[in-house]
Image (cartoon, rainbow, N blue to C red; front, top):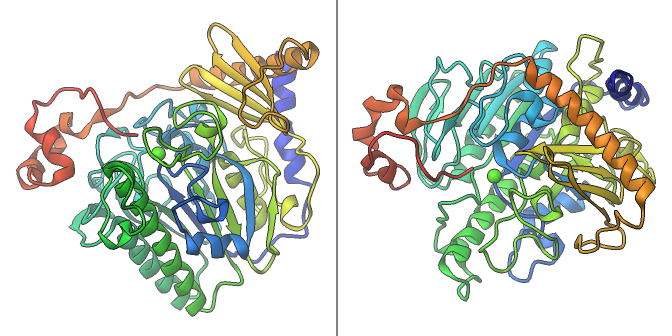
Length: 473
Ligand SMILES: [Ca+2]
């Protein structure tokens, strides 16, 4: 056990040291993430109804990942994996709403340390608060500022039309579609940094197309024959796509496109009960370890380095942290936290056949381990219930090959069990903080009268303050 843990520890550093020549003079970096957009929900995958001209243009101008994985099949856990390069359970974010452990070192902190201006815009969901998004207090001990963001206009969770958001602690009522609001605010931040000749790191975490589903009449054109919730949900993706156009146009207008990295993905797989299917032909939906729960749209655009291409190389949100550190020349050392992801800088300019390290997942007592086309699915970690699939021949995960590939199955199981033990060790060292709903947090009491008529809040405010039975994630 100890030996394998050591091996795992040193693996990422080996890969980080491989590629030196791509090191760049502090490119601008923009990370964009949608909330609950499934793998099948883009125009570039020939969706039967949805058109996403702006995502399509981005894909045509960048590297399109056809096997991009959210670090977990759920929102907060994946967000933790983006900021840390680590499996969510290691960071204390076991389920939606859990706060990010304060011992984590985030990408924002790393980039701020070398002179980047850092900003977060939109859904945060790493501060231990559940329920539909409310603005975050300036002295919240888990706010984006605590984790390295200089500027933040953020909510605790998803947000919709005319959101109330927190501008570094000041509560502000905004007007307009949620995607438009955060992109416009992010662009003010970007514009200011460009004028000051400062490199920026901008995180835009959208609240669309998460429920409640609500979109404008214009954005629902073409979806007339869908049921109401599908129509509104798809309309939200149209609005999000338009915001991508606004963002890319402004970046171009500012003359910084060439050396600006824009990395887009979704935070978990698509939703069931929406039609047409949110996951294309994949199996499973959000909250499952099937491909439909984990695989999401992903694109990176960086004209200076990346020539337009499509890749089937498997990449996950846990790779974002080490990839960006390599790009900006930050080295990890023995005091760094163990990473579950690795730098994928190599695939920007070449097309490796296989990925050397495996991609591990663990969430809610379930897991997965992906070794290129081979996928171990862990249905129950405590009771060791495993299956094995070959995605190259079985994209819908219908044919469990564990009984006919017993050696491979055993090796994958052993590797998962060893890795899982390293996560248990990290968890045993931390203080676990359970999330609470804002309705049950007395700091929000003074705002309840003012917010009682807001559609997204009213049903929570009208009930008595005790733990809710249902909230989104
Ligand atoms: Ca989500």
